[in-house]
Image (cartoon, rainbow, N blue to C red; front, side, top):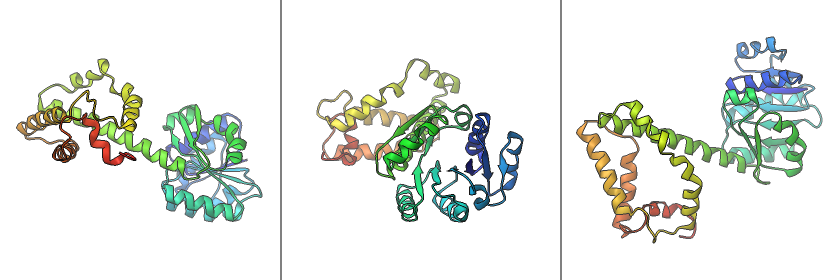
Length: 285
């Protein structure tokens, strides 16, 4: 028996996929109507977390934040069976995750944080990526079950908070990627270039392919052999911002990049590679 708490878009589709594989599932959601929608899939809907946890070998959570996870687990605790394993897929803080793992270990309850790079469609199709960290033996025991729920499971080591940190880093990059697309469209609008034409840039120009190499170059901290000098990159930023101002518009992020560049120009890095703006964030540079 599996218990699942949190019947949002992800949780609901995880439950649908579990039922299609023939798993017995008990579900609970704060808004009962969302849980009731899964009765047609054969899930047993429970009125409270303790009832949903009762008899379950595994408890999965897809909740909103640390406070929700802590609240629901405390309410579910009276229903925990001996040997139950708590698998938390929620995006939570590394600090909160570490404290949660410690607290449940002291109570003799196995806890594993398994955050996701998955959409609701991934949950239904058992594709996408799951991250996890913590006790290796616990992961090894769960790996087979987790693998059925996703396309790839990545173990990140014994630190129970590591997966939480890596998940936040991934989400940060997604936010910057989306903001980058937004600013491309903003500049296109200022230049009176149709949005479809701006989007077509990425039909022949794929900067995403360069991300792994760019990260390695940043970590190498080799700023003295430029492929694009900071002074020249700042000139291009000036051109972009000038065009946007002429159109009486603005970009939300580029001015902050300009300020960072200006700081490093004042520090004498004009002829270094422009990635020198990452210098202060890197170790031992």
